[in-house]
Image (cartoon, helix red, strand yellow):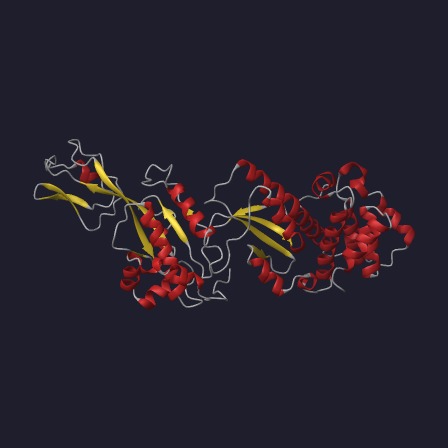
Length: 456
């Protein structure tokens, strides 16, 4: 069967011949599949239009079920093996496709003044076409009208293909998972209007709207743009920045939201057109608890609060409350004074615990890990030797890491591979120096990685 033939015939009967939704779908199926339904018998489905006249089950769906029945039933429905399962699957696919089976709800979503319910009729025809293809033992991929080139093209905009269909899941970018109430309302409306009504959060805290038809991608993008929203989050570039909720967490040592939002602005948005060898993920953790796994990202930032002991006030108590407070036993009494071992991770949990105020302050800062990754190949990031004390130092290191990856990474390799090939000491030397920033224009202007290595 020629692709889209059923949809075109159904639309013709609905708009040009002024048939109702149930009649249009059944008449189109009769023509396309040779069901041999006499014209006078079409009247039997007419009363199902408009949800049986009361906004109940959609007439287009009823017409589709009737077409399936005529296709598979030879004598009696009860004697037709698999009929119930086939009809149930068709209804399920219809609801997934349009978000509801009820006429009143579908009219609210799809009915327009000039086209009436034409979109519902067309999409019902798509569902019926897939069902008929399965009954004929054909691959449902034969009903897919999206070329590999178009699938690749829209992936760059954040739309991932649902295999075997003409549907895509579109990723809406958030600010580290944060959206306004107005944005949330807009996304929900878009999911109902253009998708199947379902939403999902990705691990990078983008919101994925499910089941958007290929021909609805641009209208969908235009709709969410009304609230300043846009799609993306794929490709060989800086990916959406994620962070833990360290701003409100009892253990949080830094304002993770403020830091991640600025990183988002500078490097996800600011570097959105910069091609890299592969994806580049950034995560911000508020403390060494590592809830968001910063050390498993290409670059991870962890809040720090290094203890600063006032030795004059330390009494060397036999039972040291401060040492007991350390969750990893990194502090102990040594020669009558509190001391901290090399394994102290600057979590700050000991600060303020001494009853004699010997440990009231801690040095706030940031620890930066580079070269982490998770997947088929894993690598734990390595910490740079310095503790950074200002946000600007963090932004500089992040930018230098991206510039180094772009210039010295090979297309297709992750940052962890680049570091392993060049050597950590050399990479750290460059990240702690200023040469990369001094050559920023040169690095960004170079024609590199014209075909990136990321596949998602």
